[in-house]
Amino acid sequence: MLTNYIIVAVVAYLLGSIPFGYILVRLFTGVDVRAQGSGNIGATNVARTGRKGLAIATLALDALKGVMAVLFAYYLHEYSLPPEPALYSVPIDIIVQQPFRMGATAALFAILGHMFPVWLKFKGGKGVATGLGVFVALAPKSVLVVLAAFLVVVGITRYVSLGSIVAAALFPIAFYYLNPRQRTPAILAMISGVSLLIIWKHRENIRRLIAGNENRLGAKKA
Image (tube, rainbow, N blue to C red):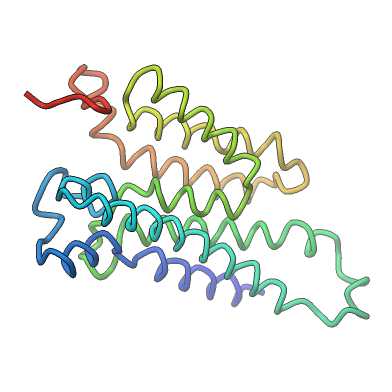
């Protein structure tokens, strides 16, 4: 079974490491998106090229690769189960909790791939869109909670970064309460790891928020 976790980790990392923002901007404009703005490969920095369509495509594809990583883990789990007549002898842990452990493993490594892609010398994005993708695949009900929190925070403060940080911090808590059968220490640790990575990637935003000079949504630069 360890082999399955290794396969999931490798495939999820490779999926997560596909730098869609970099590829799309380079393909359609010939520009290296890392040479402008924040130097990030995510949708927000892609939008700074003035190509909103590319930004939306980047957002969708970055989220999709997170979804696909978790779905691959679920598929591999199902493929590895014994035939139906022997399924009754399989411990409930294997049937109920193991797919979530594999899915959480995929989530963690997809985020690591996006943030540290081997193709771009391990300099990637902040993981918000990919995090959304893996969270949707893992626990859609929890995503509704954090999405509501994100919208409320952004609506009140106009800080997208703060909304992303709050949403990332809230997801493990929402998962804990809404998924009681899957809240094992290992699963919670990996999900919390994903959230902490996203928050850590926003450390410069946090510094600017504290200093009071973070950019607000819709604000015009002087």
